[in-house]
Image (cartoon, rainbow, N blue to C red; front, side, top):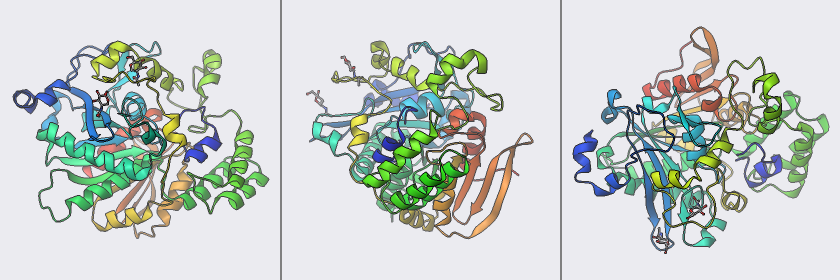
Length: 459
Ligand SMILES: *[C@@H]1O[C@H](CO)[C@@H](O)[C@H](O)[C@H]1NC(C)=O
Ligand SMILES: *[C@@H]1O[C@H](CO)[C@@H](O)[C@H](O)[C@H]1NC(C)=O
């Protein structure tokens, strides 16, 4: 999901892209994963972190890498929920995006070597588990090379489930803890699919180890047909493409798969890409990374009407940081000397993506029926999985409305809009791009808190 990914590849490959102390005495594996110090970390860190590998398939030699960040000691981590975060791509790292530039406690400075605090880190509210998935992404690896070329939705969900089962064995103090899954973009597939696996394995169990309560997805790929309608409409209504290209996209793309589009559709998407020009499609009103470095002085890295600056080059810093040998060793990562660099997104995994069902809506129906908590959010300046795509997809569920579309407020200012349906809450974040917590950290934090408390956004 880099900003330099072309529209064709975005669509071609997819549309986008303390108890501790006394316990640890008895749990060697957990203790081995404890992070003592991350190179360049700020001082006075008051929470515990762990990272390492969980083997999900012995035969192939597939191991998934995780980074687990607990809530601060003075915020009772032992009574807070556990939240798994997943990024999409397919092929992108949850550590590169979710942890290092969205909801984690640290952001990486432009030197690629030092870290600074994110005041709106979600670990203030929950214990956060970041998983690099599937094998081949980030530090997660497989010893069977062909796995990289035939990864798809199903194996990703199965491996993630296997990961969780084993992770709970390593961290038994989290068994029976309230558990949620969150993610964005192509994780709009991963999150409901993994949720469904957990829900179905928990069925009939009155005290499941994985005490799954619900999920939260942002700018999420949901239903190819309705996502396409809403995406092309967004491009046209935001003046990004011509009338003729708009019509061509509708004819060539709307009936097909977004992950594996037909040739006609790929041609129409290339036209759209040329017409859109050098914008950041993930955040259409902010400067892309290359542009901003030369224009930094004039614009201070952001347009004047964007209230908060953000650094569009931030993913480049993680490319430096996570490749430092001392960082890898502090993370207990890359212990098998992988023959390639750590990258924010794996092109191989993304380009060769196999199975990708057209729609997640049947899973939504099943899980809504089961009474799980489901929230869907959207940054409204993203053109990759735009708010209109999400609205058409959610609308197709035909859920009864409980509270109709209304503005929600943060300190007297509109933070976005929300609609509460029976079984699902939709929240937009105004002025936010594809990575909502990167662009609007405070609004994203409020949204996450409302989700955990199961309270509608305040009007
Ligand atoms: C992958 O192969 C390496 C080298 O043989 C080995 O050390 C490692 O344990 C294997 N990984 C898994 C998950 O089996
Ligand atoms: C793993 O470590 C080797 C050096 O042992 C390095 O060349 C490679 O880039 C690293 N790969 C990843 C994915 O971290």
